[in-house]
Image 1 (cartoon, rainbow, N blue to C red):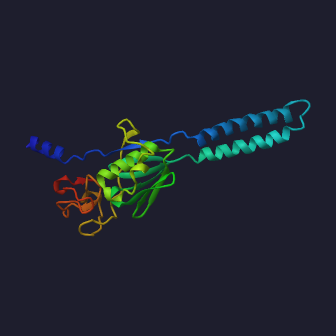
Image 2: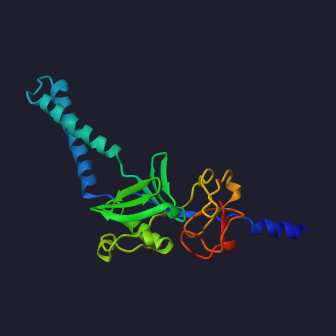
Image 3: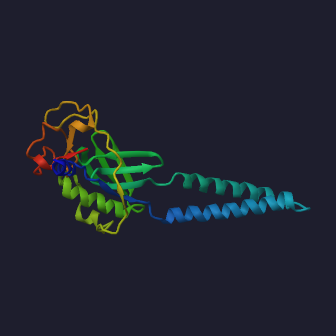
Length: 233
């Protein structure tokens, strides 16, 4: 009896979801901002010394203080507006900025396209985007994962994909997916609302949501074989 219970518990154990987390890479603009901040700090310091520390203040000291303050302030403002971190994995694409996380599940992605230097992921209720010069590896993973899970939404040409290269298993940091908010969504098969996470089952490929007693043989979104492969939240 004990052995049977243990086997059942092991069989129903939820597998941990993972995704890759990407930090923004240094660009020419970010390096220029750093240098501007350093120069501004030096100018401000020199101006303060020349105006208030020296026994005989220099006539150009106020200009140094003003120019240094403007340059330092501008650099600090731009540094404070750091690019968001990008997460890509089993639970779709997410932008992480401070404590805020905006996520689009693969089943909700409607289009992935390149607009200038920005990769745009449009979902049913949200859109996330980031510059490919700041996140080339994340861009490569977004397109690669989407091509495997929901290929119909990828709207990039081969020439456009060449701009950020191919994904590598060493890219990014593999992290656990935060708990998904499923309650409140509707079952894809029956359109009935899901009141509790325990009643939901997810497609392992696109994360489409179903009530546990309404799971079809094939996922209605990505068309992969589903049935018993549907996972608990």
